[in-house]
Amino acid sequence: MEKEYSVNEQIEASEISLVFQDGRVESIQLTEALKIGDEHGLDIVEVSKGDKIGVPVCKILDYGKMMYEKNKKKGKTKVQHVKEIKYSFNIDPHDLGTKHNKIMKFLTKQYIVKYTMEVSGRQKNMLDKAKKDYNKNIEDFRLFASWSEPKTSHGRTIAISTTLKPLKAKT
Image 1 (cartoon, rainbow, N blue to C red):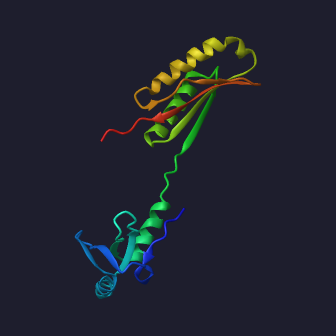
Image 2: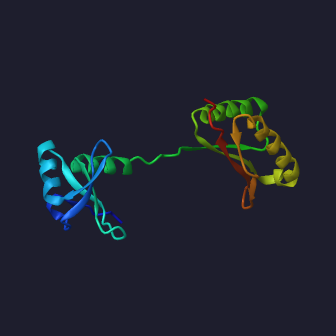
Image 3: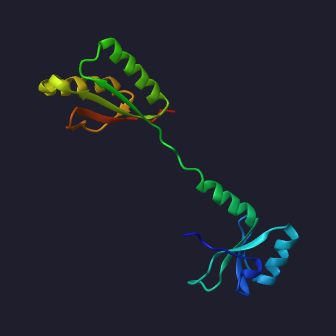
């Protein structure tokens, strides 16, 4: 819900509390405030209706610039990149090392990494060993990432996965 501002002649009160750009506050007539605004090429913007104190609070500023800055802030939403790395239970140690190097690059770039081990076929009989191996593998990232308890999803292939979240860089 967008807040509507009353600007210049839209303000209904005859007396207002005017906040100047230097921070001082004066209680003056609206007509006088409009003259001051015209002299400086600025607008009088009602920021508070003044329900409790009776006199509305207005600021002297450039209304167009204020709305531009407000809209600009709305557009700044942080996009979080999520990368996924999958490997099978019987992966070669060298290939696993290559995948771990890739994960380290992602974590240093502050990406979130979904880390998944897939177990299928006859390997399902060794699920306990697979979980131990998986937990040993994610321990390699303890200095660089945090994670929650790995989840196991059952189906045609069993997937053990967790999300590695990069630790904040120390500045």
